[in-house]
Length: 112
Length: 117
Image 1 (cartoon, rainbow over the protein chains, first blue to last red):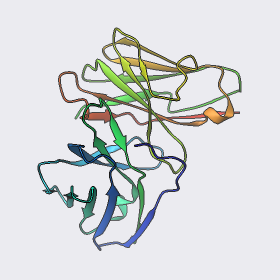
Image 2: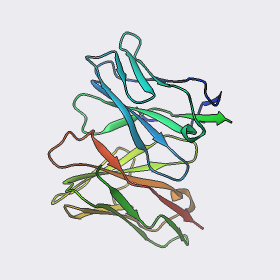
Image 3: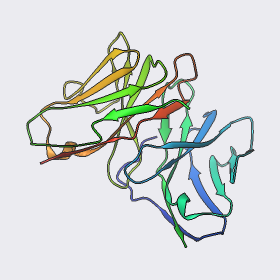
Image 4: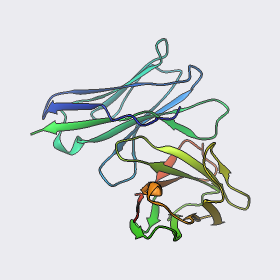
């Protein structure tokens, strides 16, 4: 659903540590999820996606976990680097809708 | 990967004037494009779906007479903010799926920062 007037949650991690960013999605029937990275003043960039028939998917340094029971999605970034500093959004595809619904977003700050 | 561009990247206009923002798919055709608005420290909110050859579909609460959308070709959609007011100041982002692919495989433009004074 829509995000209304909320400030972004923040997460600060030390360079080299692992980061876990969480997202609660709204529709239990959603069948496809995407994580995006948005740097300041830029549009979102695709990171990784997962379909509802999976509970885990791995990419390069990133892993997405899906828990349909509690409608929870997480993004794990291994060995976090300063270049990972950005706002991260999850998005869901709800059945019957022809667009994506974006979550609140989390600002990740990597401390060198 | 597919590239979506937006022009201008930044624009400042006076209250009461109109501003046009262009969204182009550079290396693919897009029969559908999406327009989002993003206020500071907030998420993306879908404003409308732009359809080539037909009228745009607006989300609830978005004034179609204020935010005019024209999908002129398979590679260009424009958003015109008419009679802009300071509360229209925002970051406007477009996205497009490659025609023939799932709509959620969207490529995003870099955004346009609109400031209304």
